[in-house]
Length: 424
Image (tube, rainbow, N blue to C red; front, side, top):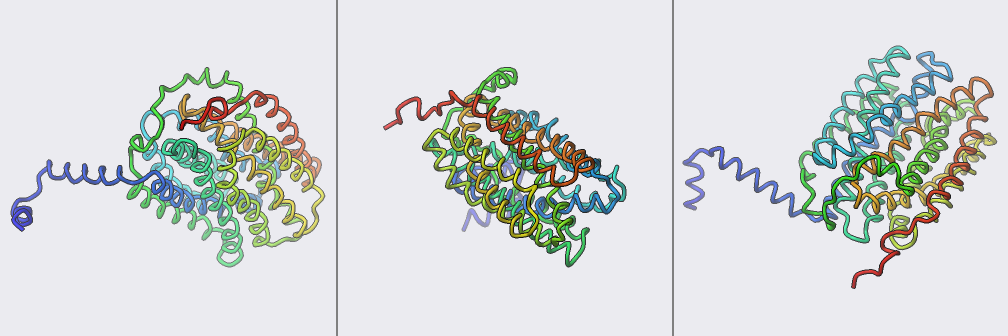
């Protein structure tokens, strides 16, 4: 009681405030890695729901503004252009300065971008907003993935990264369904504002619950950052870059132009949301299971099988002429990518623990962004000259070709845990 009275009688000084902050840091540092992973996954998943809401709506919005097929492709690609340019830097800088400031800044900018979408009345303005949105995105998911890898216990790398990616994909899966419903009942602008509102909600959660310094939760020693040049020369890193590039090339044409194909066969916005949602939900639900599997076997085999299946399905979408056929193909595509994606992240994490986690994730995400940049532009040109179905023939052929190249670069890869006996 005496200490309690003294606290009321004496106003707090700067040192007391410092002690309070220190206690808060100590409290956050006591959080277990699994709890940090849960909080991080919940936060990022909600933010990705907002992004998923506008995902299938942007091509339709562009057409409403008078965009041609090439311009639609450019608008979609603009998001990935800035991702391609800034991904390597955000990952590397977060290795040096910490993950949380980047995630917080990105979520705040998501809210700003949602308003700018509504203010866009011309194609040129929409391209600019997409460029800004792409820059914003490199501050959130790749950095969050690096954080998940930082805190993952030994031999649970696939589980941790798969769990976070499951949250990301669940958000992106729920988003298109909500986006279609919002568009049908409330209009385009409400969808954009919803994205901003979810980003602000997530921002408050990250500020409150995610610790700034997660180094104390890491089960592996901090490594010096490898030079970018040495990463680019690493054979397995080259294979991971190609994996992300060619998978994005195939998925990009589906995600960008499936809504336009759906318009041609008279599907509703809600049906488009269901199709894309089914694709993403399957990827999401397979992340933890396939992540565990990738912790136990050589992940390269999962990559080859999953990517090849995805390429075949994209190729087959050119022949789809009904809701049931498009839904079935997207389910199979989700299975293929759900197998390949966590395996790719596991190899990335295994190499990143000795080369710099954020740096390597930023580099491989650049491959994804480059694929998402090139694919919509080429697809837009193909649409203007040969029609919408030919887009999917091109995307499928690219993905199948990429599978062959990925196999060549990952042929000799052996995970560290398989090259040495497990500790007793």
